[in-house]
Length: 111
Length: 114
Image 1 (cartoon, each protein chain N blue to C red):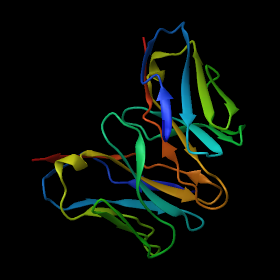
Image 2: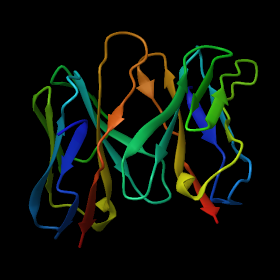
Image 3: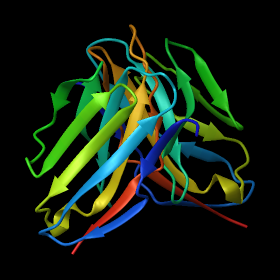
Image 4: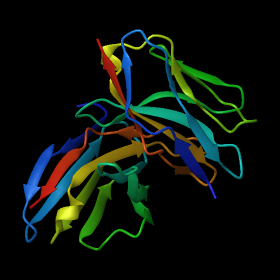
């Protein structure tokens, strides 16, 4: 069945370090792919998305590329800031209208 | 008000109380959702309403009762809850036409059941 697997946290980085959060999915079709972010004390907000193979979503310095061959959508940022500390959720939108969230990866960036 | 709002932001209740959570979306969307977010667990979809009709109920206990009087408002009525129901309850909305529908979330209600 349709499912998503996300890298477990917490992830602790120093400011300006490189970030990768892995996300892979299994699907019978070709889902659209989202990354959501949840800052402390807030709800989730869309960070970026990609709707077809080889698309690259980007926002606030974060990027993720839709890799059909590896069924992955890894989140990357070249230089993280303290303000990026949050929980990140990978969420494929599967055929049939189901948005399924990964378990979330907590990122903590230290100055 | 813009986006999706939720009230109250925090709620403490005893197991015998009855309370309601309110969600309002100001985006003109036609679908609304309730999620439960517990510590150390993935986000759980509870209920889905499309055009005010409930289209999904993910085996949620009957002590949670949703109500969608119109496309802008969504309630979650709570009664005789258990301590394990303590969690962050998130409301979301989306415009479902065809294909992909991005969901917009409210800030959540932090519920504590004593």
